[in-house]
Image (cartoon, rainbow, N blue to C red; front, side, top):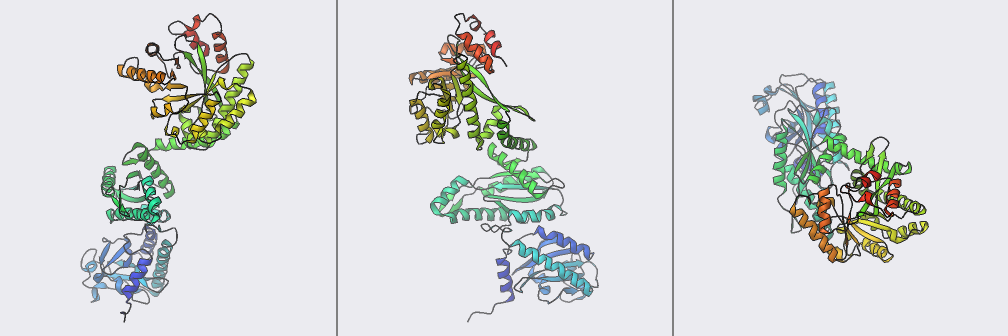
Length: 607
């Protein structure tokens, strides 16, 4: 026959079901605790939860300890009472006269505790007030304390509802952090409050485990990471599960150095391997840190923490503090993305054109279409700023279509004027991987009766040029139709020669970073020379980008590069200047283009 169920068994089961078995602190209760202290003018007020061997004070004011042994618990008597349990003078009651809180600091004499009763009738703790002098507690006082205890119980039950505890980790969720936040910042803790958010798992690697073994091992990783954090911060801070692999906590410390030391200590604990279905996983650890400003809300705080966290990601650092400058940059990028479509409709974008020259004759051979944006509020914005923003959104396809139409319209207009300007147009990887890029481009060329030989498309090298990429089929279709393809910014990062033999590329444009040092650095010259000669062996035309100084031009000419593009010979210019340049290039006398610094070329198209 099974032994009878005891009150301790019932209480343990309820605390377990409410996931409060080992909760250290519940800041969401602090406003009720303060209200109890104020209402009864009591220097000590607290909420206790009773376990098997100890009681924990999960919200407290004026009480110097966070827990006591269950044998010394006055609340253990209160939870067995049907009503508010009152002891007018603890020192005069033989049950409590030797209690550590009575005989030692803070030398308490009065106690009143209202039991916290769950919906199933099981008492799990008490809301209590205490004083250092004996007191009389009237019936109406008992009613008020019992009402406040009901508020506490309501908060505890609300915490356990969906959205207040994370179902995977069992830790308080982001919603609970928002609920707890006012109590945390209003606490009387010394020092400054600092918030920390940490990302603890390598999502791509963890996702591989999920694909092979299912979600349970992934959830186990997250759960174990949460346990590690909670254990490391036990008695220091409550840990909240605020994202799939992200946890946050708030601490009060006297200096930023202390905060950083704590985060680095956490990193040491978190980076020990975690096991997922017998597969050791190496956690990652990045943190965003932010001091809490007066009057700041929890939603704004979490946003600022993410600014710091993503800064840590980008910099490859363990932690980054919130940066107002980065925050401003993120806001500006968001504004650019949100304003782009309106900007296209309102004519804020325009094209300029930078010519390329034959390295030997200095004759212009083509022009590259370059997009520019004059924002009505922010003013001129560099494409180096807005293009990376667009590439991260669906805007890139819209902007690329606009560039194609504007550039081809201008090419058609030049041809109508009797001026032939072969044109280079940049195509982003996202546009080429759509699968219909060439069909769209061919239709645009056909509508304007533009020969495909007049157009060159520049693509940026990268892993997207792999043999299985949909972009490869688009590039092959273009070249089969007679369109020229150039690799732009070669040498700026990816620089993989393997795809050069697989793709029908005509031109290799050496990035400015390769060109910058060739006037003075023999190693830079050797590098450019090697790339040029290998490209020629493979049958490619070579173009030097970003040529700004005469010594660079002299070296490039000596090496034998085919074409030159850069500010030394020509700044980006408007349509009329380009038309004039190419029209004059057809004249037999080209003396304006052939003296050392080519001032007339520069002057005639400078913007």
